[in-house]
Image (cartoon, rainbow, N blue to C red; front, side, top):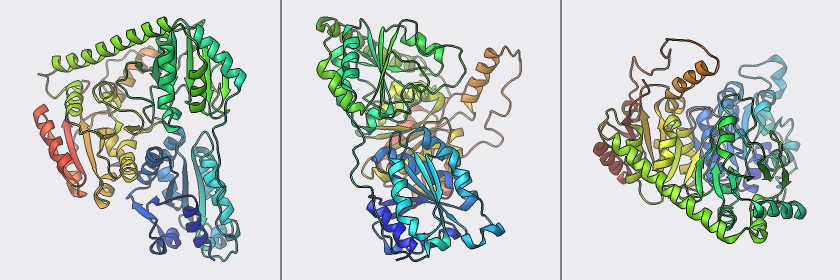
Amino acid sequence: MLGRDVFFESLKAHGVSRIFGNPGTTESPLLDHLADHPEIEYIVALYEAVAVGAASFYAQATGKTGVVNLHVAPGLGNGIGMIFNGLKANAPMVITAGQQDTRMLLRQPVLSHDLAAIAAPVTKWSTQVERADDMADVLRRAFKIANDPPYGPVFVALPINVMEQQTKNAAVNSGPLFRAPRPDAAAIAQMAQMLSAARAPAIVAGDDIARSGGTDALLALAEKLGAAVWIEGIRAQMPLPNRHPLLRGVLPLERKHIAATLSAYDCVLMLGGPFFEEVWFDDASPFPAGLKVLQIEESAAQLARDNTLTLGAVGGVKPAMEELAAIVTPDAASARARVAELADAKAQERASQIARAERASARRPMAVSLAMETLGAALPAGAVMVEEAITAGPDFYRSIDLSGPGSYYAGRGGGIGQGLAGAIGVAVGKPDAQVVCVSGDGSAMYSIQALWSAAHHNLNIVFVILSNAEYRILKHNIDNYRGRFSVESNRGYTHMDLEGPDLGFVEMARGMGVRAEAVGEPDEFTAALQRAFAYNGPSLVQVMIEGKA
């Protein structure tokens, strides 16, 4: 058999049914023989970053390994930012790129470079298949490493001549691998004692809870303890419904503000996350003095990585929560009282958001709070949200009813442009769902080519573009910079407005085959959404919202 045959059979041996890619010359062995493997669908992107972003969100939405095929050095370079985002999101991906014929690499032919070296800084493992005899084992190892906690991308370069070499080594996989070990019993017992004795316990829930199917275990533990639950400021998924009474909210992005938030508690349990992704430097601990800090991670690399703990343990987060819920013995009356207080706070928070939108109802362009309340009221049951709202994110979180894992996907790492690209992957992975992508206008321009892919594959996506004609997050950040570094300035916001010319998302969408319209009033927005949800195929609604200045 040929190297390319082993490649395709390796994909099938690992349950792969989709390849996300942007085709090129050195990928000819793959593209020319896709027809021989009809069980594998090729999702076409017009830009490599879109292919990677789609594969990353596909992996998060399905729990399967995202497979990407890029084109030699420039194509891989175009995808690097999204590979970084996937690394931060712990998205299991096998990213490949065609390489030039190895017999001519010494002569540095067009488009060639050391591809494994380019990818190495943003992947868990990066290599090149040097001969067809190695194809089966390289791919087996690539899928294994991508799915070892913490999950993440790996890279494999595929020289065109190696794909056409003969080999007797057939495709293999690593077999069933159980990667969620039981945590140490003594550690769980000690944690149970500290949580049971806590006057005000809290839990910080990371993405691994959603990834492991641990929502019910989290709720059982939190309800028994009467513990407030917080989620990370930057997150890829929702570990539990965002309107659940015990979910207190989203943690800030600076250490001193995290510490201020956690000062209400005497014992905090952190589960399944990097803890914490920061934006600005603070010479402070994220934990107030005297707080007992417990952490459970599926990977030793993530345990106590950046913080000193009272106690930590490695183990599957779902079984760990189940074991803790079974043995914690808090004072039942106190726990019930805490649950009641948290429920009251949640109800007040929802009422406050509704009132906030009502107070802003006359402002034009529309206030973000009003736009998000309008969107939330119009969503069909079971809608799956892909969010890159950036500065509109807090209003999105408070206004949109998210039912927990499977209802929400977002980007990690901070690189923008993930929303539109990610929506492609979520829609491919959840073909029966109504996917709604909410993106800022600046972010959308980083992966606007995703609209073509949505139309080409007739994906069920409604793209909502929040259009304020500015990089609003940068204006907030330059204010923060000036304050933190005592920079006195009466300057405005240089190069942060998206004007002259204005961005015409309706025209761009229609030019790529996507139905589109623009709105500026709440009733227009509602009507446009209803038309979009009734349409068979992708639609875009550009919503004019107010800016910062």
